Length: 115
Picture 1 (cartoon, rainbow, N blue to C red):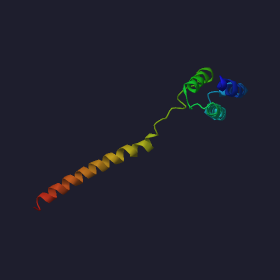
Picture 2: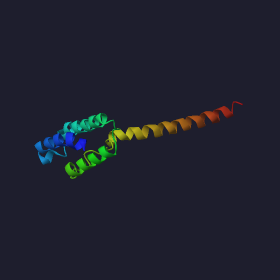
Picture 3: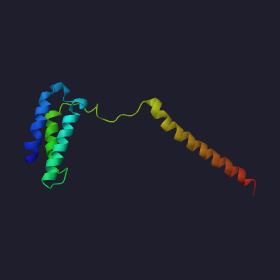
Picture 4: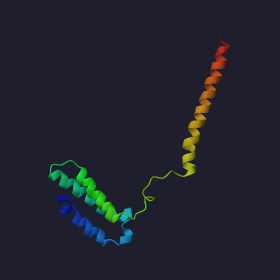
C-alpha cells in the first residue's frame, strides 16, 4: 500500500519521538497528524484517486486504534459555554417573544374600539 509505504514511516518516527504521554495532546500531535493527512492526500492525487476514500479511512482508523485508543474524548468534545454567556442567548429571545406578543394583543384591542 503506497500510503503506508510513504506516509506511515514518517508518522511512526515522529510519534515515537514523542513521549507516549504526549500522544493524546492535540497541541503536540497536530503538526504530525496534519503532515500525515497531507501525505495521504498527495498520494491519492498521484494515483488519480478520490480523497478521502475507503482505503484512507481504514488507514486512519488503524492509526487511531494504535496511537490514540487511550485518549479521552472530553478534551476534544464541544462543550456548552458558561451560564453567564449562554443565559442571555436563551432569556433575550424569550423576553422579546413575550414583549411582541403583548404588543400585538395590546394593539389589536386598541384598534377594536376605533372602528
